[in-house]
Length: 427
Image (tube, rainbow, N blue to C red):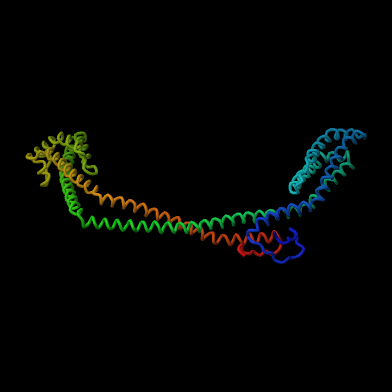
């Protein structure tokens, strides 16, 4: 599939450029990973074999220390040291040397490093107390540990280079994955842009036809038989508003007079005396016109107090409206009740006529058409918003994809160690 590939780590000479398609890169990277494993295994095979042999020999040397102690006579103090320290030293060394080393070179290197650290720690710990007891043997053990260290050092460049190659390979693989995902995402985005444009065009056509129908209905409503009904409805609405304004005017005058009476009572008889008037006036002071049953009971109960204050001169009526409402000839509760009755009657007439107007078939159709137009308009805006988002995303991908291609290109060249040219998948 591929042209011959030079040595992974140090090609003998710069070969000519090799041509690949981007589609070949994943397989090329997989093949290169196998080369890294193979070459690292070959480069470290000798050291790994030597280290295994040295570890076996080292275990034998440590095991022989106990037998040498039994064969030779030592100074009593040295014998005590050997007796107490040797088992600890053996345990530390055997702990570091007993575990098998993996076949994988990098795992081997890690495990061998930990084993070597344990041996060095054993020598610098319990081992230093044994130098006077077993000078020759301990010297041989130390030299063997040092030799393992030298073999480990000999492996280090190959291990480091392989790790660098693996890191580069991982980066290339990640860039390839992202490049593949970005290209698929852009393809999906491009396809969806086309579909969205078609759907928006269809929705826009339906919306325009719907708006034309709404305009036609509106024109018919303005110029057809509904005009008289609409004018009658407007007249009834005005009558209702007139009754509401009249009632509101009377209630405002009542509230003003009762508020003045409240202040007089508080000034002459104290705050408690004006409490009922205060509550009544607060009811009138709310938003809109209060319900009839909230006003009439209080008005009938408190009106004698107001009349008494007017007759005594404690409460002065100043304007025409106040004097008219609170004159002896006017039954104020009855007038207010009649105001509520007229207002309710006017509202019922208006509401009944409004229902007839709204239930006219052509207006029902108009209402349905308007709701549908609003729904379609909102849908079109949602489609446009999604289209804008995808277009922006594709614009970002159009910049990202060439950068990813360049990074993959450069990474593959580093992995192969020679110039790489990329050809189109179609050529």
